[in-house]
Image (cartoon, rainbow, N blue to C red):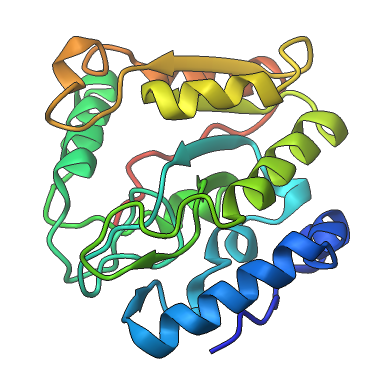
Length: 227
């Protein structure tokens, strides 16, 4: 099954050179081969979900993940997010705990669909957009990182005032792609159970991001919009 780049028009304009580049043709060939031999996630129609839900000119906050969840029914193209009815993964449970602590709310950890964030301008971008079932990281270093790095660089170059929430060493390394004179970067350890207690808990990134948006005259994110 080939990747069909059906992507939101403002992103298509920005990323067209990537779709036309030789590496992307090689990536498509790799994905066709993978899908012929293995189950892969997310479904083809949801690979570009982050871009399709959050247009280029509407991005206010960026959260960067590494690659999609690799178990059945989890990945749907938004980093850290799972659809309704799917058990909430541990990292997202910890994200919700920090939101509750930071904002003084009481979000239920039974739900983990972050589409409501994406619709408000939070780009939920995995560095790698596909994965083989049950094999974390299996589609890394086949071209997706070049594609998503180009998206981050385009936001850095063409936009201003975006708040980047970078959690863990992998995401923090992406700060090299971001113009720090034009954008805001907040860093913390990854929210996984292995590292959340090293500084993710208590980082207060959600209230800080909203404060930065409001200082620029922008509407804050309703972080309680999890369904």
